[in-house]
Image (cartoon, rainbow, N blue to C red):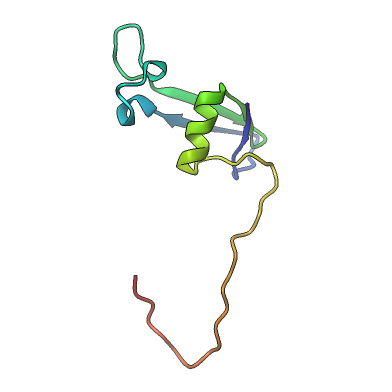
Length: 87
């Protein structure tokens, strides 16, 4: 599976450990039963990974399925003076 990262440097590395979050999934465990730490190397913003790892990265919002950088929508409201934004 091809996945894309928004950082477009020549090389970028992402390290994940999905076995810590999903301890009962055998794909994320080593031979000794301990969670695997997985290193994903991106070259020019692209990496090829197994489909289960690609889906995990997509679900976490760490990568994109497309090389296109789509801007996040901006909601404009009429200006009525300074406001404090609260969460």
